[in-house]
Image (cartoon, rainbow, N blue to C red; front, side, top):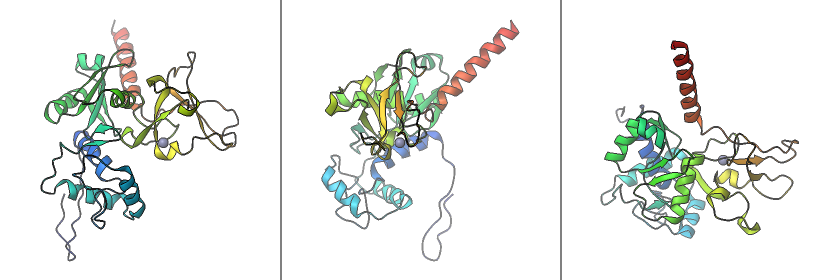
Length: 280
Ligand SMILES: [Zn+2]
């Protein structure tokens, strides 16, 4: 609902949007609404038309940026609707094209049922996801039974964007236990640090939001990351070890916040089996 303009000319906007629209908006806002981008009050901030963002210019503009998240979203939408701005040509954000990214398993794709995950943490049905793939050209990641990417659709550059896509599909968001930051707000982190010989292999990479990234260090108050071992039920996922002051056990823990779709699918699957066996 767009409310009537008030005496000051300002209008109230309110309403529900579908997961599909949310995925498209999130992809745009992840880039255009971040601090230092599209600031109406700062002509030296980075414009929506800048396909290549100079990180020094962006960081300087972000330091001057005093807008709250709501104002940045407003300014991003304003920038998006300016003449000459093509929403399909917004360059890249964190190494990937600014497009909705939708992840689904091959099994679900073949069955035409199940839940697909968007990079911003939303869930859409497989049918809705495929409709999006036809009409809006998102990046579509399909996983095989082992969780390895089979198809990296419409991605121009293959090497590191492919790894990032795989991480979005596998981790879905920040891997620190309890953190709800979706993949669109995450950077790629080396589980074993690069400076300590950690390779840039998928098995040694994980998604971490900027806040949690800053918590990882070698001090007594720092968090550590490990790859969960073969005998863990979370094999291959990223485990986080809290500082001793928070958790004296030193046990690595994983983040389940972004895997709700899998729980839902597993619950539906197991209840179908139960019902099936009862019927038989
Ligand atoms: Zn986080």
